[in-house]
Image (tube, rainbow, N blue to C red; front, top):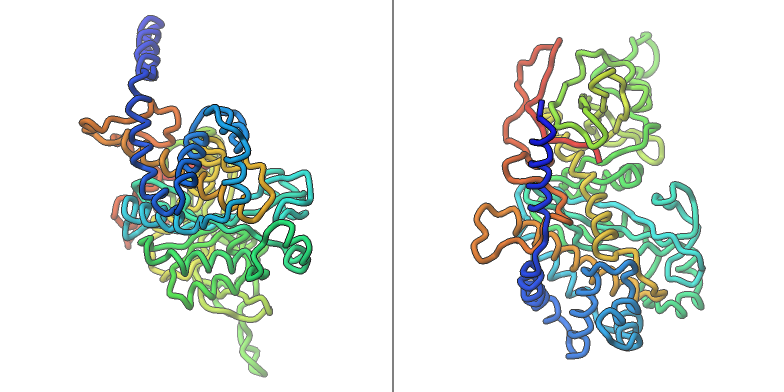
Length: 461
């Protein structure tokens, strides 16, 4: 057991490693200027370029509220020019996001990458901000007044980043001409579901982001038509589904034929009820690192099933995957996640587990953008203002990602890390990354009494 003196000495060493010297920031600012060059190169006017640089610097600062007014005062500027640039000026933000997607694809791209879609709500008190309505707000855990953005993220073993977003415009907005005009919503914008917005981003950026999986939470996986559309597009998906989703288990025998009429079909069964019919030996243990709230055991199971369409008819064949988390001490199940996939039935459980945990990475992306780059700190009400702020925030967050990756390099030379680890969310290279995965597959002949997959670096979010 470590003596108190040894503990204090080690603690002092760690504290010294966390000390930030002024030289760190001296080296940081020139890198930020170089980082911004390809983005501001998409802007037409000199003052727009300067405002974009100023705003991103402000988003990366330690301001408590990273809105245009606070950022302008931070740099000793008048607030009106920066507020006009952000909320009124008609500069096109799409080319900047295109540049972001291109950089993420080149720097993080891997053949087995994962594209993740996730909605995120921004609570609002008024009714004039574009897209605000009473709708489900995950941040508050209830239906409330908020705006909802649909975010597209990219995950690979190298890192994870947000690459694009869309503002969800409820029907009450698309049908209100006066409200649209006041918020500056373009005339060509029509009502589109959240899933249609995802498909739009996928069509626009899918080719630039090498990927093997499409993932999303249970809001994304709930409608059958969305899963079917991805299947038609030849995209391999693993989408979370609600516990009351019904399927037909194709790995059980159908009811006996009575000799008259049609042959009976397997009954529809809820996925949470399906797992209660399984035996302990049906589950495969996946060796994982301890979770953030304590040691966990992760077990997974897969079954061939028939999906159910929105019209209560049989759909295409899918693979049902359940992942449950158990407390390592008392073996109590603390959480169970349910997924449906169009992958082949012989896909290794380790691959499903990797894709499932990558789905949670976008939550980390959004938390990082909100906590470190002011994603939710905007005070704009217009369509242009919302998209301008979100775009610049995604760019600022990407800068943090590039600096974090710089800090992971074994030999940085003259390109040493600009941070002390204050906003690093990952571990040193000597440790397994949570979603990097050895290319080993589960043994084909595993004991039914103790089935174990290779160690997969999973962790609860």
